Length: 267
Image (cartoon, rainbow, N blue to C red):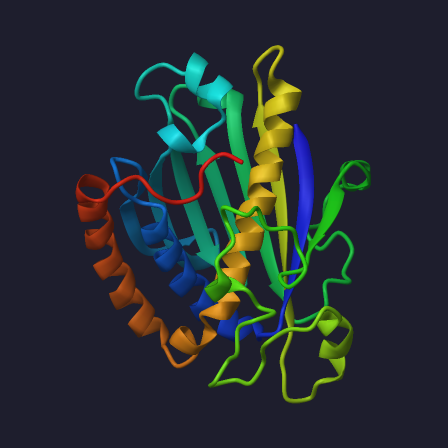
């Protein structure tokens, strides 16, 4: 088992992020879908259980060209599908990813708290002290983080993007130091606790580290895209988002069949 906590500070409010995240998820799903691969949405509905209330989603990620070659080599045909079940009780979200072939030998759990701070809270998820001591904290700066050349999109570069509606960009190299003092610009942090378990003798450590590296890459690219699309979603309501999600579900079904393979491959 390998645990990391990723902290992503953004120049937006916790309330704004709720809409922006869902908008960016829909757009990113379309960017990753085609050629029989990508995202398939099975369920997207409200839920209420044990005093928790929010939106439940169940998706399948078809990943054949998006996994390391050694995994492709040993994986049986049809096994490269990951089921994602997510309970979005915003500002807290919990996501569980599993694989039917690996069963209980594979799980990725992502727990996220969205807080109106600069990422300076310790152990926001309330882990036991012994577990927290083993957890590596990784700060992701959307302006200066390393982006693979094949992932780079100038339209998703916060140092070049100019927001016409909010005047919050472009971001300079020291933007995080200046942000707390900007009265007209909100800020927040997404605290993402990622627990990876891959029980396969001889491969466990290698694969768990690789998965954590992939999660960091995903978080960096996703939040750069989220922020740089702010002018497209800042005026949307949650009703707008739900309509968009329904339309996106239909589009994804068509894109998996008709489009070519695209999106983020193995680095």
